[in-house]
Length: 123
Length: 107
Image 1: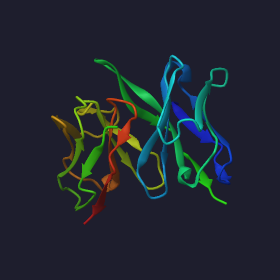
Image 2: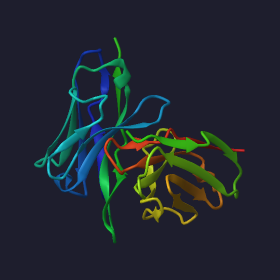
Image 3: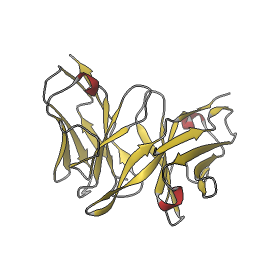
Image 4: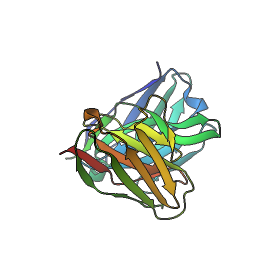
């Protein structure tokens, strides 16, 4: 079965660090584009970061310089290292696979999502 | 960044109704537009990709269309399980951006 399972969320003080993990099954992480997307309580969806299959990365301006996306091929996992956390980073964090294979080739769309992990930044 | 504006923000409808949700991009994004459905406490679920392609396993009552920078999600005959929040998302350029969501409620 193709699925993603996030872990690592919790309560952290402002300025602290947290590392989220996303374990994939049914497909190989390094062969795909993989993103982190977050949702603040009662709010909409915000894209956070992407790791491309080639290993390069992109980030939302709101997290650039504070968050780092990475992957571990041996464990087939995606990670998000979050440093210098702020109250406005409080959200459910989802990992998602980005890529649909169609007759037109590969298209960007988040087709597989994890269940999400809650990060609360508060003193 | 490309801004995605959905309308309406909320919508009340009855089972069996035909419903249309609109998403407008702040600039041309070709057909790089996806639609998601989110139910309370759950992750979003991909419904439509590339503006009009139905994701595998999604009922055919869902459809998408495009006209310039305006995109439409249509549900032809609402079912009880369709009451949820719907989001559009552009995949034309980084940063990927989402609309603010449309909450579809039971009348």
